[in-house]
Amino acid sequence: MRILGDTETKTCYINVTLSTGIRENIQKDDIKIYPNPSEGKYSLVIDDEISDDLNIAVFDVLGEKVAAKAIKRLTEDKIMIDLSNLPDGVYFIQGFTTNRAAYTKKVVLLDIIQNKGLLR
Image (cartoon, rainbow, N blue to C red; front, side, top):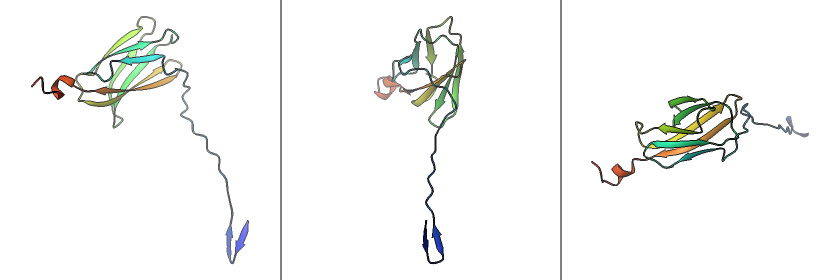
């Protein structure tokens, strides 16, 4: 502590730990989405290690939920996600298992045929 005239200066250290409060035990390659980019139809493949049911939500870049789906894990290993009704852009597919493990994947929706001028 230093005293400068009538002013006192103190140094204070604060440790901050950030936490989302969600246990993330799904590994990067446990869930695959292809093709990416796509014209809107995606295949979501779930690794056999994940046995819980999934709740999937799709968000646009503004954070608005644009689609959602609940998946019974015992019956589906490959899930089709159709976003072709949405405008071109970047979307985030976010999922939670029943034990609250989380994942997020970024996908790009791009109508390739229209953008090349082949279809009018």
